[in-house]
Length: 91
Image (tube, rainbow, N blue to C red):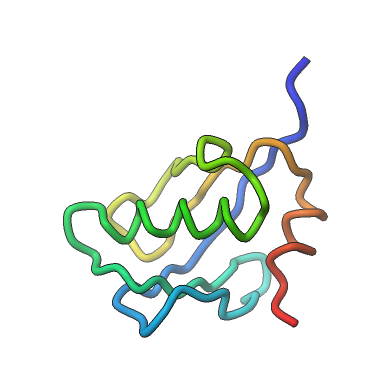
């Protein structure tokens, strides 16, 4: 039986000074990544950053939609939505 999973809506800002969670915009999480939006580098950096922030292995975070958009949807395996929100809320 698989563990908990959920999807997360993101607004991603590439080329930021550093990787950071900028906060929630309703049900969408705003995230800044240092990597440029070139050749998938920002997407790769985003997935590694989210996995690290959530305390999950990289394979537990996958990009579902928005490969070439600032608005993205990722699937997170291993945590429920409430726990994801708790771990990604700044402060």
